[in-house]
Image 1 (cartoon, rainbow, N blue to C red):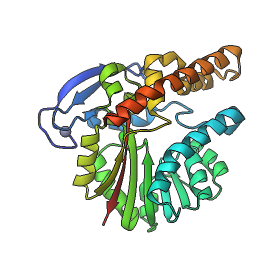
Image 2 (cartoon, rainbow, N blue to C red; image 1 turned 180 degrees about the horizontal axis):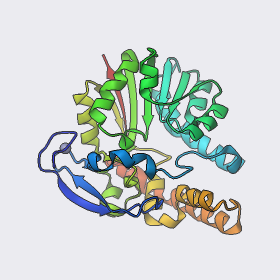
Image 3 (cartoon, rainbow, N blue to C red; image 1 turned 180 degrees about the vertical axis):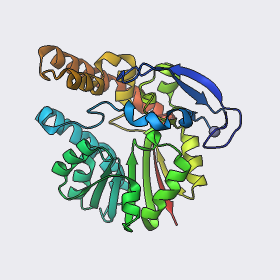
Image 4 (cartoon, protein in one colour; image 1 turned 135 degrees about the vertical axis):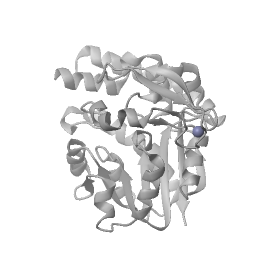
Length: 315
Ligand SMILES: [Zn+2]
């Protein structure tokens, strides 16, 4: 099969996967590997029409009422020390009209606003956008990129935190969103890194693959290649994410403790979220998350961190 990123013609079948974490489908999914750029991908023609079926309720967002204030504070702290800190290292004056694409419940938009950015979010899911509206009133667009491109909306900075891996035809997509950028444009993309040490160790059991929701699992090289092909100029690459790298390792080791799949399970059962068992699981997970940090730092220092964040510009 032809690699959709680098066009190498002999990408081979690598894994036969199931939906291990959310069980939204009982189907088998095929992941192909490109030995030229490192991309691990699904054949998008096979799943394109079904992608929306693969998202369980509560995926990367949550009704505020169901979150404890402690969990909300923890999430905000993580995003402040991860996404926002990276952004402020690039733009210390906190200026610019920013659009966070795939903004979920809008936590990052809220924090970017507080930091001084003229921040907005774009979210496809109606439910998530409603929650985002509570976090950042008047700042959330519900819909698709095209809904902003058509009326001529322009931004100085676009951010895509864990969005690009879900998107089909990324070449066309990255070209298309250039219409949203006021030049010189700035783009921040963060995705899981399929060539991380932990991805190599866990193989098809690595949490970061999130099959079948991730259509493309990028290596650093494949992401940089894609951005270069679509006209962006790479300015900075980072491999550490406080929020994601240790968490991916902990959830790969003990999938039953993964907070997001437990939350999705609770939503399905409409269960209570503060039982003793849950508190125990949360404490165990937190301990694992802390213990995972030295490994996460080490793999990032080797350029093999579990996420890759790229800052690129468009002239
Ligand atoms: Zn390739």
